[in-house]
Image 1 (cartoon, helix red, strand yellow):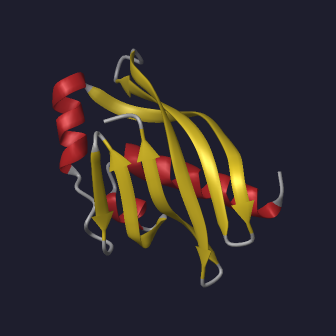
Image 2 (tube, one colour; image 1 turned 120 degrees about the horizontal axis):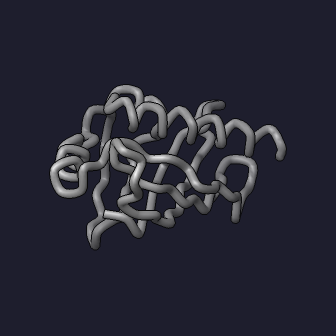
Image 3 (spheres, rainbow, N blue to C red; image 1 turned 90 degrees about the vertical axis):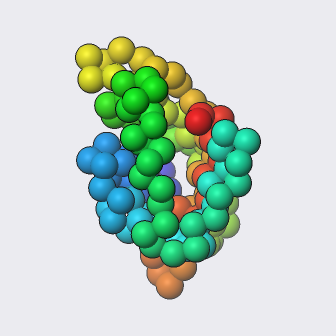
Length: 126
């Protein structure tokens, strides 16, 4: 794993930690804006920090008992010096550790002003 890939892995770990802590500012710190999310047959563009709709997690908690998510794997697929596509798989879990679902996604990290951030996500999960 080279330096760029290592930095993006660490970025994804910070993002997952913030997501599981229900920390929108921590999640925003891992994103570049505008940020694009494609999921559940919708395309949403977050123009700036603070636009992340945390009600998604409230709905996941209410519908499925979501408690946390974990990476299953993260694999680089396409890249250049300022962009890295990561094929990721994550699991959503209930508090008792039972699995809600396992989902594949594409996360696109970009290096802007010397810093890596997640620019776009396309997920097969809700």
